[in-house]
Image (cartoon, rainbow, N blue to C red):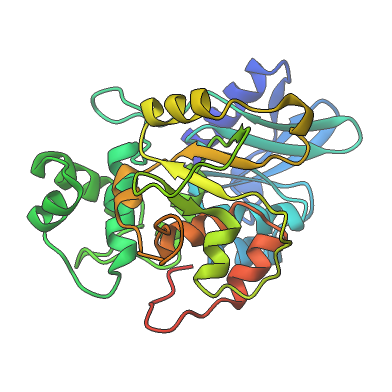
Length: 317
């Protein structure tokens, strides 16, 4: 595994125009898996299967600055923790971050290095995969069966079974089919990517829309302040609904800095359907989607998320 991880790193660097050669035989120093020479700089390399928060803390305490960790998967928090300690990482699912001063700074997506037996990228977080993950996160303490998840999400029994195997292999789902917390949540954050577009007006009350973003966070009791002028962020279920909304409320180019409202397709149709009746103009997205939206903001959003302890809800973040 260590040898394959180092080879992958060398191939990736070569594809970026950087020549990496072995600087020290692995038998000479067992404190790391390899020492490479990149240009005239030494790069200490550690190879792991999975790197979660606690693993990243251990690595940050052991590795010097400007080392690099290769792993099949790094959780978002693990990535952030390594970055804080100036340690680079290669997530073999498709991203490299390498800082070797002076002069070398790489932070970019790459072609995935992990494929399953059918040649598909090892990414379980398709639209269906996000639905399965959110179903688990909404009810994190009760083991559920494959058929129950299939019934809830509308995915086939076979596909749900396949996704659960993939998530277990990544350490994101426990053997009793409960989510690994917060690892599964953090993995979903890494795939949660709503593409917000500006609207030129605020739609009237409509059960086909969902209030998300910061207004939804306030409704759920997240401890944060919000200005009265902050635009509502509305989720729709699919691209067709989004196009129709944009046609009805075309963006005002003069107000792009302070939009009237925003809209996006919810990355998970299943999550979209699990809305709450907020007794407001629009149904409100559930607490898991609120948490995902907040987690995308590593500053204010993450701070509010850490302080949010909703009653009657099991925290999965």
